[in-house]
Length: 249
Image (cartoon, rainbow, N blue to C red; front, top):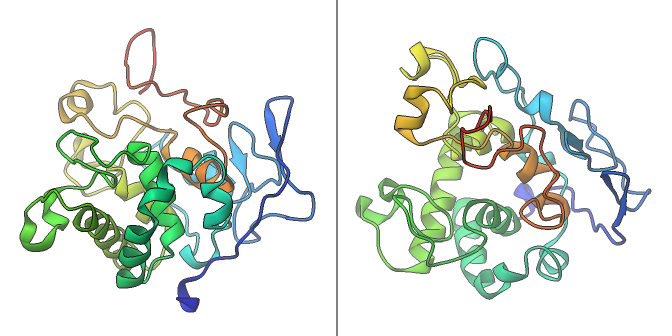
């Protein structure tokens, strides 16, 4: 749907250079994003810097800046499916239906599915399937084995967060991963802080464990890179889902 289309970027030639990923020099950067760079580095990329996405994590709690969802820079689906998102191609029709039904670019649903489950429809856990959202977002609030129901549930939750936060992509996508702001009742009623995931409370809740989530998503999958594979250097917290050896997440 045109009103929800983002600025599509076809990242044609990707070259690994000195810890950064260079893309076609004619692409430019998202003019609405603070700290944006043409090259994807561990802490920045076309949609802004990780420090900006994570505003407040090293202080009183996450205070997401505003980035309009409709301005997000990303590659198109054919380019994504031809590279890092190849495992998502088989579910394209589901993303199309879910996206069209909720006013969301289907390509973005594919990016989120890669971040959440590596596009594995049989991914388990308390939030199963491709989109890894709670059963509350399914029809009648009950999880089913339907792939379409799963994708629709993810699209429904993302749409609800976009509506709640005035189309703020950073707030909505962070919330998709369980990030929270002041007033949630968690972390002494503060927003998410970088010492929360490995605190006793954070570990008992089990989420959010990945403080690199926004960087990996908005400057990783969105640009056709694979933070779980060859581009595992994307992100500055180096989250491994473990709190051992001084890790934060």
